[in-house]
Amino acid sequence: MNKLFTAVGIMAIIVLGFYLFTSFVSSSIPFDQNKWSNADLRMKYRMARYLEKVNELDGMSIHDVKELLGKPGKQSKEYLFYRVDQPYGFKDGFSILLKNKIVISAYTHD
Image 1 (cartoon, rainbow, N blue to C red):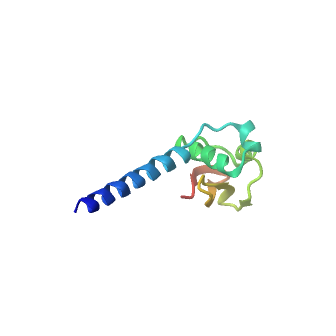
Image 2: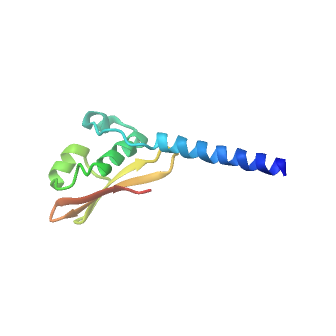
Image 3: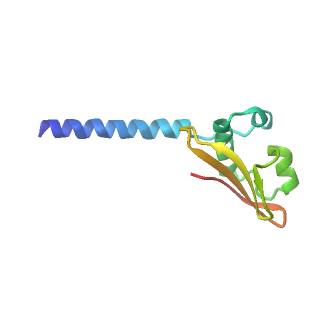
């Protein structure tokens, strides 16, 4: 019975450690246009998370978003899509939803 409690305790510590690590690594960082243009995809993910959290892009025109972030990877009448990667190496994206060429929402794909 003692071995079972020890095993459960070790598993709990591992899970908690993984949670804390991923929370720290995937946390957002303030957007910086100069850094964005040269950032790797993981850094862009963290900056995109910041833009998402503070609703920085809401209400901006499509033109202003492109000035800020550069050319999107994909674009349609309803959205812009930028490629970003999560810190653990998962392929990911940052979508910006548009209505009448104005941003109504922006989110990272988790």
